[in-house]
Structures are given as C-alpha cells and as structure tokens.
Figure 1: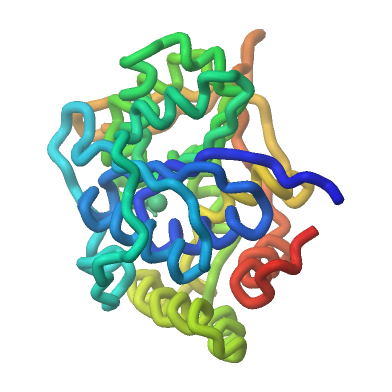
Figure 2: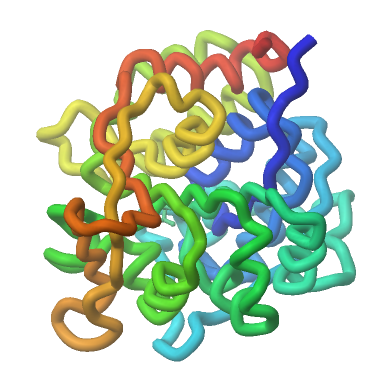
Length: 305
Ligand code: RIB
Ligand code: CA
C-alpha cells in the first residue's frame, strides 16, 4: 500500500479551490488547510473551507489567515465566485470549528521538522507573512506549488493574474525567498477547461458533493468567454502537478514579480536562462487525463491508489 504524500494547502475558496480540496483529499494526506482572503473575504474563504470539508466528510484542521494583502487594498472576485465564494450558495455556519492558531503560526509549525510541501491556490500573503515571521522557514519548505501568475497573459490586467495582482508584494517576497517552487500559471491552467460536458458528468453522478459542485461550476462558467470550450479549472492543476506530475511537463526558470505597483502590478516575469534556476514553470498538461482525475476525485472518492 503506497503511502500518499502529505502537504499543507493554502487557499481562498473559491469555486476552483473547492475542486482542488477534493483532489487533495483523494490523492494525498491533506494535513492542514490555511485560508487567505482573495476570491472573497477571509470570513467567507474560511467558512467555505470548513463547509467543503463537511461535504467531503473529511476532518482537516483549518487555520484562518490574512484578511488583506501585505500593503495594497483588498479586492475580491465575487463576479466569478459569487458573493459567498461558492456561486449562489449561501454557506451555513459549519459544524466543524476553525483552529485557534492563525495561518502564519500554523505554517511555521507545519514546517518545523523540515521537508514540508505547501500547495498555494490563492494570493501568497500567508506565505509572505510566515517568511516575515521567520525567514529560515524557507529552508524547511522542500517545495511550494503555486497556482498563480501569467507568463504571457493576465486575467485582471493584460499582465497580471488574479492571485499575483491581489498581493504583488507577497509574490515578490516569495520569489526572492529562496524557496524552490513550481508555478502553474494561466498558460498552463487554460489547457484544463471545464465546460458543459463536465457539468453533465457531475450531474449524472447524482451525489450531494457532485451536485453541489455542478451547481457551483455552472455559476463559475457564467464568467467565461462563451467562445471557449469552457472555463479554466485553475487550482486543481497545482494540486495534481504535485501529486500526478507525470501528467505535466515543466521548465526550470527564475520568476520575479516585475512590478508591485502601476500598470504592470502583479506581472510575473519568467526567465529560462541563467545558472541558478530555483523555480519551475509548468508548461503543458495532459488535459483529458487531468480533467478525468479531477472528476474522479468527486465522482468516485476512495478510488485513488
Ligand atoms: O486567476 C485564478 C486564480 O485566482 C484561482 O486561484 C482562483 O481561485 C482565484 O483565486
Ligand atoms: Ca484560488
């Protein structure tokens, strides 16, 4: 029986974050969830994380994180994720309670023994705050997998992807920290599109979780350009890039956040040249296989080896 990998998920649920949590529960030992403000407020991202775990029948400690970026004014993406962060669903008070310690301390505790793996699917504020509290934590993170950035494009401005734009200073701090990381940017995640057929596959499952996510997915798709085959399912790519790397290709690189203000705020500049390449960019995804893995995590939980 192969033991599943362990990791901490830092997220801002968020509809695609919800799909990522189900992937994490299916293919790994999800040890800890830390929440961050991003798609919606920290109140809502934290409540949504707890609710998604209840829907999944999973008990994972949830630690509330930053309620705003390091410096810039907070923004949200309610036009894509709905006011609650889960489409039109009004998330009830969860039965499961959040942990008393905040996300920064939870991240430092989780990394204390070294070789920690973190997957981040929101703004990098919590990672930056942990680095600020103890810069040596970078030495105890074996790898950070981040959904964010845009090598050739943005989705907030022409240059900036939402997670990077939301907290550009946190991106700059994280990229400069010495942490080995892999970035799953918009060029990658737009290879994994969820359209009407994925909604149908979820509805045909006729389970509470699949129906809930089908409803959320239909809301999420309202914001996409109808000319495409569907809406990019961003966040599960970072989780599966860690847990099923054979379905992706990567290039060594160095990534910087070229601007934390102005017109190019949040732009991630990627260089593939140089001697010491600390980072990687995920370049291609086996789209069909990745889509099938995401749906399997929801439709056939417990089926993963
Ligand atoms: O740009 C896409 C990213 O921003 C995803 O993580 C989505 O959940 C939002 O946080
Ligand atoms: Ca997210």
